[in-house]
Image (cartoon, rainbow, N blue to C red; front, side, top):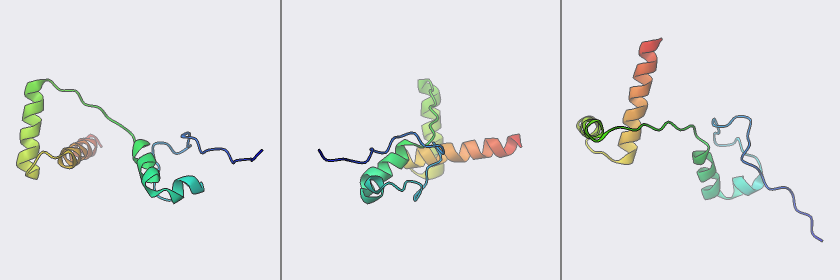
Length: 90
């Protein structure tokens, strides 16, 4: 019977702070798409729920600042807002 090495687990001590090069198992490093998806999936998450009016106001503000409301623009606007808030709290 063939012996196989254990498949890598999703339990990493640095979760959710994975970066390129952190994963050394050849399965993940040789499969670039899977590796990238794994890194992206292991990032920290913040979920914001808004009522319709607040959501529309937020999207309008993003559209004015970024020129569109693509997912990448919304993500960038949220990151900027969080960074500004954290800097203000310091």
